[in-house]
Image 1 (cartoon, one colour):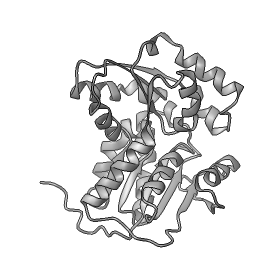
Image 2: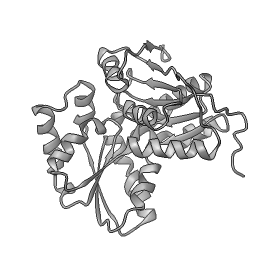
Image 3: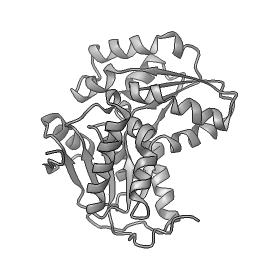
Image 4: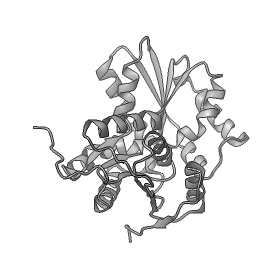
Length: 275
């Protein structure tokens, strides 16, 4: 029997969480797609990056953060992290039950990719945790076993982005070194399997000279969230949503990133949920 979700209300906020600034790409895309929705964002900066953490740790972090977002009365929770989506989505969904809708950032991208024709060889770049899970290859091949999926762990990219090293010589060198690997030769399409990576999408497009399509999970997930809320009659109409941003460990770089995405001064609050 499908879940009823009777106690959800349109004016309740959308909760989004990630290990750091990467999920802000998803928050920004959702805000652009649904400007009248209130967003509550939690960046678990105390534990970033999630990509090198154990599955049990990520499940624990994700449940605790989901618990926080439920207390904030979120109607929908977006796991805006590929590693947490791969390793903790089912755990979070079971924990949340009928208290909120739960969306990961992998399934919408897989659905989007499978709608495309004539794909033979795909590339996936992400954290060690995401690539080790092999979740993209598994899900894509369930839908179309004839597509060859090649996944490459790119562990340096998250730290590089978190520290603000992108759109410069350092980032171009590191990105070029990863993309030149044999696994990514002769691909038709590249999936950015980390929500940090849309921040370096222009550099990736430059490397491929715009000859390969790059799938940005943030935009795909935003459209999925919009369709889901419409289907459930849960779209809000806030005139001034008043977004809220929380982190588990305050950093200046995170504060700077929120201003970059939302084009205004953001009040960033530290919540010591691990203390």
